[in-house]
Picture 1 (cartoon, helix red, strand yellow):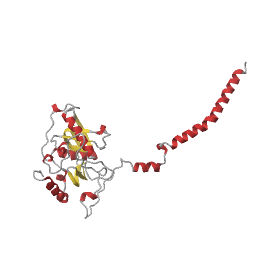
Picture 2: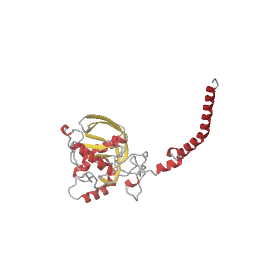
Picture 3: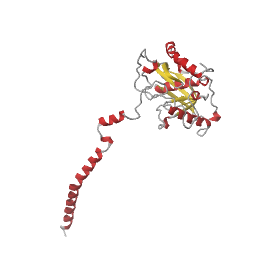
Picture 4: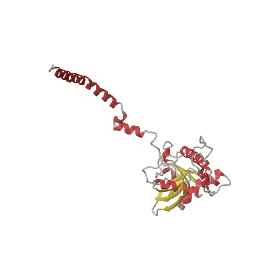
Length: 284
């Protein structure tokens, strides 16, 4: 009887050793197989190649409403090309497009010299700011549809024929990142930085053209949200430039107004074409 507990203990030890000697190679083999089939453990070169071919890797762009890139150099245009076709700027990623008809809305991007781009824009009264479901909320939602269809990151209401002080933007330009969507109502720039920089800009309302525009590096803004709540924010860098461009539209100012005389001379032939296409009645 004194030997019985020792026998049980010895039996358990032998059993564990037997199981381990059999199971460990199987577990190791299974683990290796799993790792070899997991993308996180594939060779770095293979993963880099897959990222390069990802649809998220955007081509170059020339317009203010598109996404930023790390490249900030400006290449001098060749004499055989239009000035905007050989410029590499802060806005060098997804190229903006005119979507024409956009599903879910009747709003369309207006082209220069449409009068709505120069008409004074009304402030939106407090009683209209009742949050989701309000008329202004519906307009903002449709503006986002147009903005995403253009592959842009910002849109002002006058650009779609609504002469109200309303703008929308999403710096990511990705409709899936809806948490980054910003609606600003009756915005005001209350402070500009003295420091400025010059970058290439363009606009969907001015297709096939662009030019260098000087903007403040940072700004302080006051505005209201869809519920009428006041907000204050400081924008800098890329966001500051987006905001200033869209804010200009609310004041009836377009980016060509900010070009140098030399810059205006370069785009004048294209402006003449747009005026000719639009016909009588445009406001230059």
